[in-house]
Each structure stands twice: as C-alpha cells, then as structure tokens.
Image (tube, rainbow, N blue to C red; front, side, top):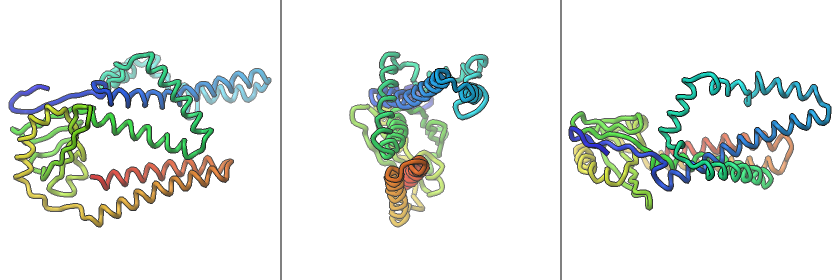
Length: 288
C-alpha cells in the first residue's frame, strides 16, 4: 500500500493468500485435467487407428488437428513464433500470480482434476454439470475476494477498482463483510441511482488495514449522499425466483438426459449447463 496526496491505494494478488492459492490450484487442476484428457484421447485415437489399419480415419483426424476443429493445433502456433503472444501470456501469469504456483502441486492438481472429471462422467451428467458450474464459478468468486487493486482519491473524488470507477458523490451506503482467515474486507456499495449500480462495481475487496484507512473517507461520502432509488423487494423476489427456477430446470434437464441416454444425454446436459449459468447470472443480479 502506498499513500500519496491523501489517496489510498492497494494492490493484492490472489497468490498472496491461502484461499487465493487454493482457488488457483483448483482452476489449474480443472482446466489442466480437461486438457490432459483431450490430449490423451487424441493420442489414443491416433494409436488405435494406426494399429487397426484405419488409415483413412487416421488421416482425417490428423487433418482436423492441423487445420480445423475446436482443438486445432494452429491455435498453438502463436506460442511458437509470436514473441508478443508469449509476452502477453507471461504478463498475464505474473499479473494473476499463476507464475508463483509450485510445479509439483500444480502437476498433482492436474492429475487429480483429470481423475475427478472422469469420475463425474461415470457417475452421472448431474455430477459433471455440478463440476462445471461449481469449480469455475466458485474459484473465480474466491479469487475475486482476495485479488484486487484500486485507489480512493478524495482530492479528485473518485474510486477506481480493477478497471471500474465511480464518484464518491454517488456512494449512498456501504455494507462491510470480513472474510475470516484472509485478512480481506469485502464492501458492497449502494449507489444513489439504480442505473449507476448496474455499471459500477457491485463488490469491492481490499486488505483489512487498507479498509481501516479508507473507512473515514467512505463513511463521510455515504453520509453526504441521498439514495434516490432503491431496488424494490418485489424486483429482488422476482429475480431470485427466476434464478432458482433456472437452476431447478438445469438439474431437471440433466436428470432427464441421464434417464434417456444416447444423444439426448449430450443435448440435455448442454442445455442444463446453459440454463444453470443463466440462473447463476440472475441470482448475481439479484444480489447487487
């Protein structure tokens, strides 16, 4: 944390806390496990096609790998001959803190992730759906709690958080939640107008010591602002009902696909995943 011209600034990476590192290892395990399974499946298809003499299938598969399909090797070409692409990836890993993860635990998490994905497929589509919903969404929320950078400048009257900004004069109220064991404080700002509440940050996380320093500024700004429009209880209830209904529909579609089997299982599982994501988005909007 630095302090200049009465501005309060902070910058904290997810890798600086136990919760953040745990979420990062879970993400590495999940996405790395999927990648490992795709590579293993591709190698198995190539080997079996060559052993069984299915050279036409082998040639078609190699062609798809080279020039087409969602897993085309052409996507990896910039990593080989484009210095800018490699530099941007390196910058991203440094910014997010993934470069600080230890190789051995990361490799173990990838293997464990592959095993869990295969196990969820064997159990039911519902387990796979839950895995795809819980891991990416849950770890993203966990990392956002501890990964934050921003600045509160009372001189200019602005608050900037992770690329978003709003005026202190727009702040109507602030509710505070402390995340146990992380040294992090999560603020939920309420704004003077509903429209501003849609475009401005819904939540702001910062280290606890930074919050104690910024607390007088935030409380003073909120006490001077009158909130003109509030989200009605009816609107919130409608959003919650829609969100919960979408999640229930997603689970129902997954169960129906599991009972029918065949192509219906794949189609209904995909629909369940989309509807589930929609439900989570609606519930997130209701929580703002």
